[in-house]
Image 1 (spheres, rainbow over the protein chains, first blue to last red):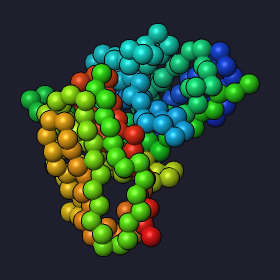
Image 2 (cartoon, each protein chain N blue to C red; image 1 turned 90 degrees about the vertical axis):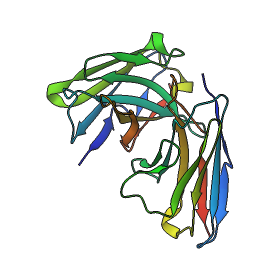
Image 3 (cartoon, helix red, strand yellow; image 1 turned 30 degrees about the horizontal axis):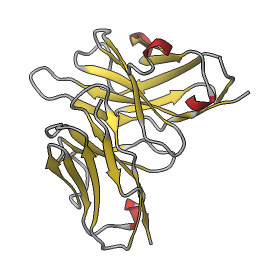
Length: 124
Length: 107
């Protein structure tokens, strides 16, 4: 059974750095084809894809936020960490992690399992 | 970047109704579109992949159609448990982009 869960601070101040952790089970990021993404949704707005890390440590970022984002993994702990620098009130959102599979010789399966999300509010 | 326009933003349905939700992509994305359902406090559920393939375990009253730029999620004989937020995802190109979502209320 695949599960993911996001954790991190509920409140951060402007200019601070946000660190979020995605803890997952039911798969391993040391397995070829596995990837984990971060996505966010500001209140009343559309979902926005942020970043992805693959089993081979390849990383992909939304170019609009690339300078502020860092994604990393700890395979032994089944965790993926996202840091976002210089937080602003417009970054207030529910942040989600979700899995992608990229099987060799077959079509990728994007965002097949999600976490429930964690709300982060940016306010002084 | 591919913009995905989803409509309607909100709809109210009666049990037994047939419901259609639309996603329109700003460029040709072949069939690289997924549909999801999300209820408050719960993880999103993967409903449809590749525009029209039902994910195993999803009730057959859900179906998807479309190719290129126009896509539709259909819920036949809608049930009270289908009250949720629905959204589409295009994965034809990076960055992945989403529709704005549809909140479905069951009367």
